[in-house]
Length: 404
Image (cartoon, rainbow, N blue to C red; front, side, top):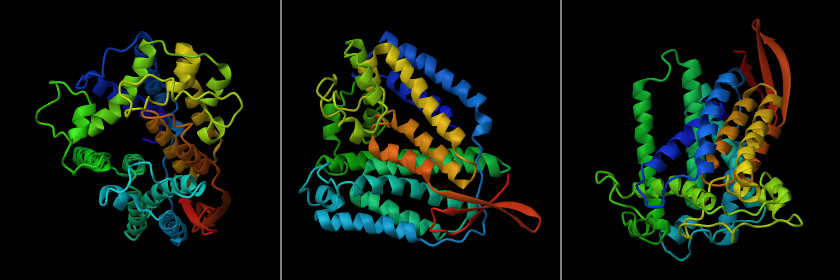
């Protein structure tokens, strides 16, 4: 469950399947290159996932781990400092008083994106510690960081953190529960997903200045047709549009053969936006990309590769991104930190259905944090058992990882 190849295949199977349901008139037939691309990369990812399965091993930390909530408190303090300095709490200014709109809140320059990246890493790490130690007090720290996401009114952070929880929960159950993943667990997970997507719709309504149950805006822009199931609440239209419209926009550009071939700008496709946009000769596609509807401006993480590299560049991007992520996983030393690197690679893969994860600075920094978190390994014997003590990220506090 930590294998990003499997997640690529699963995610795009779901996204493509939902797209083919055709509930929105944006979802027209695939162009030849988009159909060929996913027709190749989806089964290829499942095959690569199977071939590399032994490289993605989940392990727990020792239950005797000692730690303090220093990093959690620092993260919360950072977000509170942003609210104070910016004189704004997005949840209130957008969802209650309606005095601002989404994206008005920029936070403290440089600090904001770092807070997002570190918090996404650490909230996942906290959940991983809970699965290993079963200490309920860890949930208080998870709650505090999650509360910051709610105050930020950030659906992206909530979705990514939830995805991290799902990855880790499934991995933990698969490797350590003798009963493996039961039908009951899957059913409960589906219920949580359904509730989460409904809540996603509520936040969407509020963020557009409407009441929580008023889906007028999405009904207007989603271009839904009569095939949308009558038994489904309109709240789910937000999720369906967010999941399928990026693929619809990518397909639109492919159908129109909208491209400007450039090897240099193709290379910048895999560079964080904060660096790429400052490179001499960098071209922004913001005004060149074709959209079905202007507010729905997501085009998946492959639009840059398709625009600057054409159909061949689209295919090449799969091997570049997958190869890079796999290389990081091979280089990183074994230990608790490697589990979080696996998770970061899965999150990068997940984010690509909406935007370019490599150019999205918050996610790319998450990947770098997961890879470069300092780890000092020291082998020791305890009651005849060989353990690994890991220090560094937790302010020098020790962790133990029983060898699997």
